[in-house]
Amino acid sequence: MTKPPLTLYLAAPRGFCAGVDRAIKIVEMAIEKWGAPVYVRHEIVHNKFVVDGLRDKGAVFVEELSECPDDRPVIFSAHGVPKSVPSAAQARNMIYVDATCPLVSKVHIEAQRHADAGLQIIMIGHAGHPETIGTMGQLPEGDVLLVETPDDVAEVTVRDEQRLAYVTQTTLSVDDTADIVAALQARFPAIIGPHKEDICYATTNRQEAVKAMAPKCDAMLVVGAPNSSNSKRLVEVGARAGCAYAQLVQRADDIDWRALEGIGSIGITAGASAPEVLINEVIDAFKARYDVTTDLVETAQENVEFKVPRVLRQPA
Image (cartoon, rainbow, N blue to C red; front, side, top):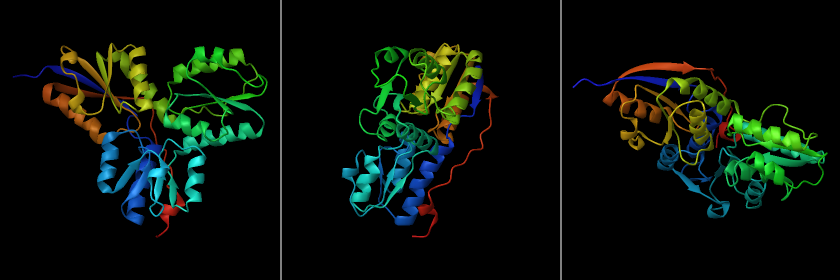
């Protein structure tokens, strides 16, 4: 039986970013250096396949530091942690390694710098996301106010309209964030923004590739986890850029083939914490059902690399 033809557009960049790559490497190197088990507070990155793979190597994932024994190393996830967490680890004389993405750490430093200058901070982010919790936890309670939408800006109560700064979560939709920033600047003209945009290069690049790819596609799949902020944003960006059907899938098994009946083209991308092996699994699933022609949609090239902490480069 002849397979129906399908053009498969593959977004580039896609998948792992430098911060995710570094975080995974930190866990692997820690297990190599100190042996198993090594504890990790929160999922190191938001991807079940990656987390399960590290668990098989000897990582134990917990939600809170209180679940970790004093005598085993603990790693803090790429999303960052409130200041209270390393302080508690120090108080218990624990070995700890901070795998916070350097671009998230940059936002932490920025927030602290603004606070030191006497400014109150407004954070644009998603309530309950570990990165938002980590950034807001850099400063005392009440010093950072959270807004999620332009409507929230109208409701926020500040100490002094003349002494404000804003920071953002690194994995937001570029366009949505621009709308919230515009609302903040309209209400608080004196508000100070970051020197360089807080949304990270990887998030921006993946969204740009989706915008270029979406109008060509009958449907689009984003490989990523349901708790991955940057993956969910890619689905939204694809739908907004003109793709009639944009869905998030964790694995090839999650593809809804009935919904894709009759398509002539599909776009595939992946969030920053999805490994290439899962993207290839999805591509292979299409090749099994269709006569696939692949077309790369490349909007940027990435060559960013972040060093692992010095403690892991030194012998045990």
